[in-house]
Image: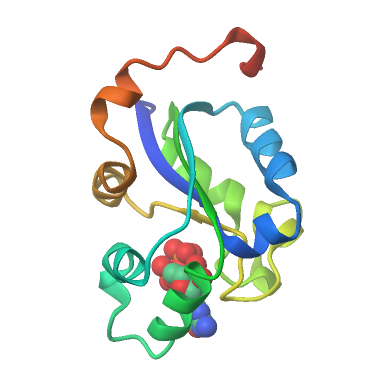
Length: 150
Ligand code: GDP
């Protein structure tokens, strides 16, 4: 079943440091997603811990928080039919060594932690994560310019 859906994406500090912002956003646009919210910010440790709280018991949690606060990130909201799974497919597997060729992580990730991009893993996560970064009124007022639609 196809239905219009929203998902939350991030460009992580490694990909920004490496100069990949433009290439990543271009691939997202070329894949037919509408970008309906976009902002650059630098997370505090408390904000990164809150965003990844479901991973707080994992052995890599502190390393992940340290990485995610090491530089600015870009947060964006995407809209497309089945956006959550479609964007997960465009990103590729968490570990770039296992990511399909041509996916964002195969192209731009360095390793399983510094893996360039984030995408919500379910519609429920997407709702929580979109609200974490964007007030609803900002998204509803956005009209994507036709030059950004393929
Ligand atoms: P995702 O949904 O593909 O981003 O993967 P997860 O939700 O499982 O993990 C969240 C993030 O934690 C990943 O995107 C990585 O940045 C990091 N991460 C996941 N697994 C590992 C790991 O085994 N080691 C380290 N150092 N980081 C990891």
